[in-house]
Length: 308
Image (tube, rainbow, N blue to C red; front, side):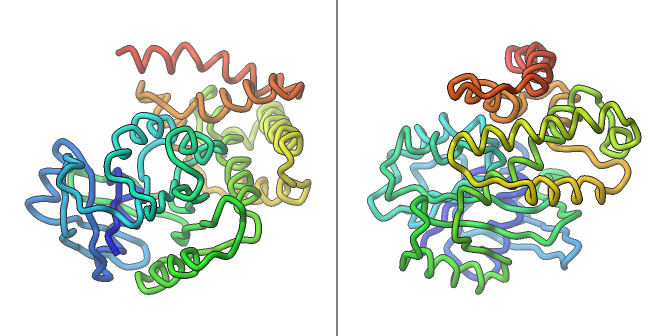
């Protein structure tokens, strides 16, 4: 199987590295100093579950060099999907599976704007990892896991085959009964902490210490649940409670990646998180005043980062 990893950040670097280490024919798309370092020295992954170094079959910034992929794993940010989709079109065949692992609730919908349904899978991942330096990925938290499935939730032959591939690569994986619900469960957690974290510019423990901020956090999540339900996704009270149990257990100093992007003046996933919530809620007649406040306060900062 030819596997293409598009984007070798914390997510693509870790899971792509595991697949390459298992002997699969892995091509990687990277750029800049990161690309040059991997070309010269290979990809180094430092992990709490065991570190390793691997040379992918191909590392390039030129899609024309990539053998026709059977599987494409997207390791880019959610806001980059539309542009990446256009770049990918020439190498996608009727047999290609595209698996998005980004945060966000509408990555599948964005892919379907450019590809037929049979090319697109639903997916997400759980991992805290990042590019430590060019050519080096650092995994610092969570048991790395890929959750994936057909968008119609059928247990197809190709899904079964994909599970075998992940198993052989030593990647913990899960094919749920309802991939949409799993995507929204992750979205509930990450969107809840990202927006308010970006606005307050403090770590999660500081938000927990403030009764006022913690109440805002809860209201953010409740609005997301209302939106999910309006879209027919069975996000329930128990899922909200589980998300907040995770939030309560996050160690002091924890920040979300979107929050860190906002604070560093980089383009962020704000539009795909609070922006998506607000705009989708307006279409469906759902009230999301807390998310709207967070979104409108952060929007100028995000726009500035994109223009600069």
